Image (cartoon, one colour):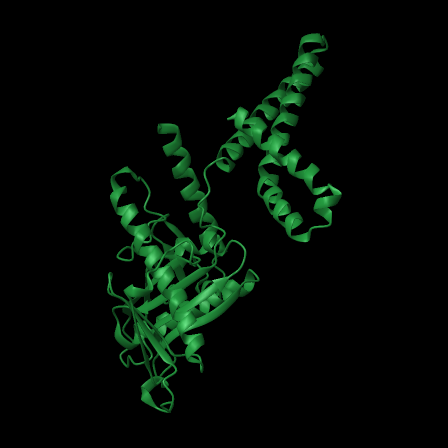
Length: 357
């Protein structure tokens, strides 16, 4: 581990020196590239230097223990050595976590798909609640959202809504949200006041470039049709809506939210690339499922990952057993505590697996 840390620190120093080169300073694009590479190493280098600082302090305290004769000073030094030993172990754990391989998709933007599941109109309303929750969470992080496709219902819900989230670290946080979300509440249409259980599924897919997922144009069936609003009213005269079928997989995407056929086609292709990449990824994960010990990041939609209970005002994430009694705040986008806890559980599992290997 320490040989790798020394290598990381050397690379960090090299990047720092290169950024001070006048030729680099005069090339903004090259400077930004080096700055991003250096920023990726900054946290781990700072932590490694903290580790070495603690080691130096421990050495000084040991010398004091060996040379000192005053019992009171030796007792104080012994206490300090124990404190520093605990500090060293903490920093070492943090270093090992920082050295874990990063998900190469973590820096990607995201395409999210929310679909109403069991529960009829109430499920569609819940899908709308989840859409608002994620857009509010994006706002809290300074990210941009863009609606790509939607199938709204008449009373404010969605049968399906697909949108993108663009911003630094979007996939690294939102990837834990894939799965089935369940709601328990009294529907607005329920006159007897009985609690119903409904569900909606969330899929989180990294938005990939054309070079990352190759699509043969001959494999596409592209159709155009007239766009309409929910319920079929206000049918447009021109065929601006676009439906694309990926023939080998049977995957179908459609977009009609833009007034331009070109814009709808571009959005549909973005969705198709993300879906095909996710399918490819899930196929690879299925082949390795026996080797995996954690389901936290599997994105298996059949798994009920979280329950939103309105009568008790609580939200429970079943993967990590975390319950928060702040339902209103969570639905307003305050989900960071869940995200951080899931990331920590994922990290702990990967550290355990690394130790076993």
